[in-house]
Length: 198
Image (cartoon, rainbow, N blue to C red; front, side, top):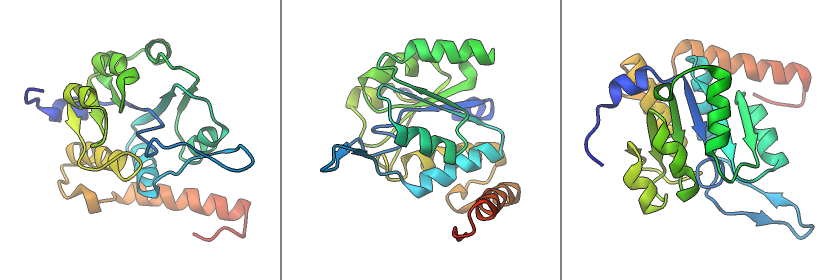
């Protein structure tokens, strides 16, 4: 992909859309002996989503599969829009775009495989984990150093914050208002369930 100036794109980003398997997770699907599905999520990615919420960037999930685990994790992380069961993702994206009434240029998408390509071609900003399919990496505006389910999402969040806040040491940067927001979330959970420790 030719060099592209990400600064104006990321400054105008209003919604970041995520795939699940191969972006929020490593892409592996584990079935327990009882037949239940298990997924492993990265906590650094999770904090990254809370940080996006703190700077006013909305988040969405569009995934081909449906899972109660994804629903639960998305609610924990305050993801604004959860769209499951869309193996062809473009209709879900178009539906979200109509609902929000904002242009393609205001959307970002992180995908890892060929079923993500249609949406990645539409949005203003696209990214791929380091272990994404080669065709997806070739299309993406930004290819992460990190792999899926192991900090790739957080890397993109740090990049967004860097261009928004002009803090280019963003890997270790949490703006005070985001830290306060995170503390509010933890405090709320502690009040609801005193057994939870911050």
